[in-house]
Length: 236
Image (cartoon, rainbow, N blue to C red):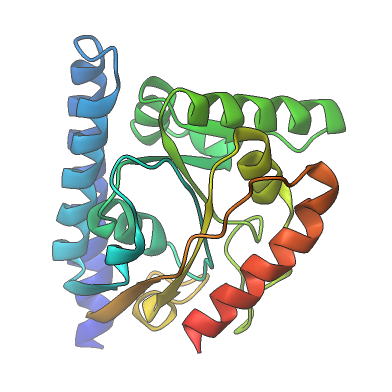
């Protein structure tokens, strides 16, 4: 009972306050930050605040596999709302996210996403989805890595859903490596459809980057299957 009350009466309100404050800071910084890189630093600070509030410690394994100066498409499993702050607060790499466009409608959070160069995904029609992929590839050509959760949202099951091929298509179009990653432990920290936060440890495991040179869009589905197998192996 104490753990639940701590979560609902202390952690959740503090998370809301931190999001409002840092979202406002990000909005103000955006007027003096044409590169959007300072806003990413604000997002990192916000994420680390949330991890401290939730009393979550994160271990990162495999960061040495990433090459300095290289642009990547990062792909990960996604079981919990904690995954996003974990990524921003722990990833040893600057990135932008590809996420559902509904998030852009949320006050403060949406303001940050809109002004800091993240890419909304619209799946209402094939043409809207194609525009999102083109926008994502353009972001990579600008020199920004992308983070994508290819299951299409958090999964309520205990196993990963089939990965959608969009991340592979973006990596192939941009000509950059795709990096499989696995998040371990966040499902226990904050289960799906729950507001009960359980402090604990989580782990981010980074796999070997997979090259895309010589591949075409016809190879996207096969590449994504390879990525999903790599994520599953990392998570095992």
